[in-house]
Amino acid sequence: MTGDTRPRSGIRALRVSAAEVARRTGVSAATVSYALNGKPGVSAEMRARVLATAAELGHPLDRYERALEPEPSRVLGLVLTDISNPFYSEFSAGTIDIARAQGYEVFVAHTQESSPTLDTVVRTMIARRVDGMVLTSLHTDDGDAIRLLRRAEMPFVQVSRRIPGLRADFIGVDEPALSRDVLGHLLGHGYTDLAIITGTRSSSSSAERARTFVATAAELGVPLPAHRRFIAFLNGEGGRRVAQHLIDADDVPRAIACGSDAIASGVIGTLREHDLRVPDDVAVTGIDGVFPGASMLAELTTVTLSRRLMAQAAVEQLIRRIDGRGGGAMTETVPHTLRIGTSCGCPRSAMPESRRPGARTP
Image 1 (tube, helix red, strand yellow):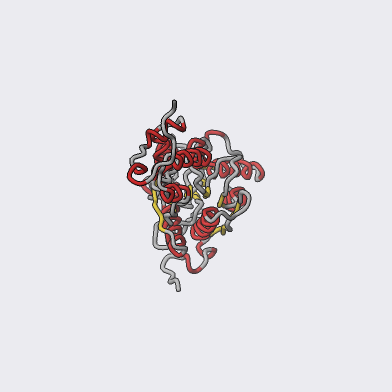
Image 2 (spheres, rainbow, N blue to C red; image 1 turned 120 degrees about the vertical axis):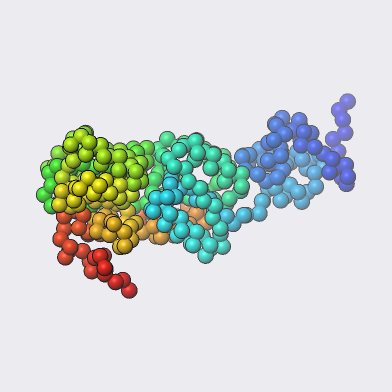
């Protein structure tokens, strides 16, 4: 004869253990605990099964109703690649400002290009029950992190980088167009000895910039052999190492197109240390437009990207997802502008007045 399975009430109900529910449902006590307390990491089907069993065994009704619909935390997670990179620091400031205006706070973390770190950060933010995540640090092989988010039913938006083929929201820029704009302008000066430095190919944006640089150079009749194509970390140190390698090999090209302003800063600094003038000896361009007029890169020819527009689009779309709106997976690109400096070889007169050294801005 089986034991008494009638619903329990009062003090008896409070003594029903997670172990009893686990035995009845055939799952672990940890799974039961997650389901009863509304924590992520349990599928909707399993949560419903555990809660139904708990109700049969006498758990108070209000407890599992709260678990079914946990209160929103009104906190967003922001996962950056490297917060020391001016592009990401400015993007994060915009994200925080825009989220706060919508009644959300933001938890910020960065991965420094480490996939294991990304997995840890995603797990931690899920455990902290953020309402959704903005991801700027995805590599093409970061499927484990996405699976964690899917299992937790956590809304997320990809920014700048994306996993090819993934049906998920993405906010970025027109990579082929901006790469053609800056490289086409550089080669328009007539340089025929060119090198490119871009980020790791596991970054979708870096891979696309490298591909477009090569294609644009070919269209303009400028050879770009393999020994002139470099991969570097997206920071000043990455640019410095490549520039130092070229100097040590006595193989400095006439022009260098960099996949980010941070890389360009390392290249220009190293060239100057070795008494190589920019642009007289070596022309240099960047992408991002992150350095202010007071810096040594005030005259860098680069593509300016609106970090604030990207942040606004990402936050607004993420909140739509959190609210259960948004429709199918969305891709949005923000505009870019080519900022003419003198590092490419243009005369100073070609620079807008507001970007010339010593110019006052309103």
